[in-house]
Length: 211
Image 1: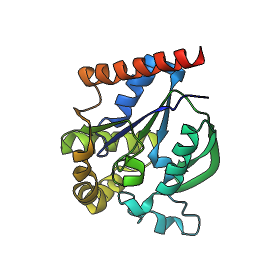
Image 2 (image 1 turned 120 degrees about the vertical axis):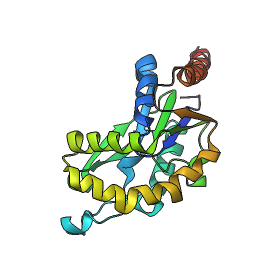
Image 3 (image 1 turned 60 degrees about the vertical axis):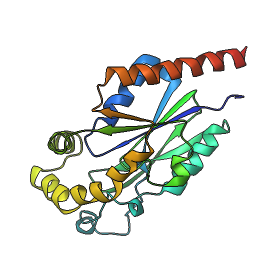
Image 4 (image 1 turned 180 degrees about the horizontal axis):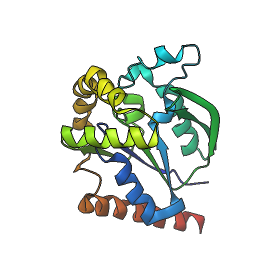
């Protein structure tokens, strides 16, 4: 690979539409786009009892192994494949299974704290912040955690009130200032069109370099 991938970071609070937006780009460009979920870089908690894992604050920078993600993005930019961890949200620790990811023309990183660490932030060519009303975000999170992550309603609400809401104000919301584009939810067609145009430009560059 002679080209450097186009790196796109998508940040924003829980349930703000980050994944919806990245899915929209994937539907347009298919295998040319690789999405990496920052959530998979939560630190392993194998040494803790399950009851202790439930008390972990997952919405602060210390919960994530950012160094590993930075290392992986740099490797992908060099044309190297990487082994990405997967996180089991039912067990609240890493699954022990990794996923092999090869370089692609466009790489998207999606996560609440994507812009918090300067080392990670500096790697992105485009930075997008998904904004949404707090009530909408908690409802989306509630639906996701119950249907996809095997959580119970009371547990989701307690976690939101004890850590998620406060951490959003301390760590997530302030990173909006770093964004190149701020979108209201994940179905913003105008923003999708702007980013899609940049991706099309990148794909033309890749095609030209490949000859």
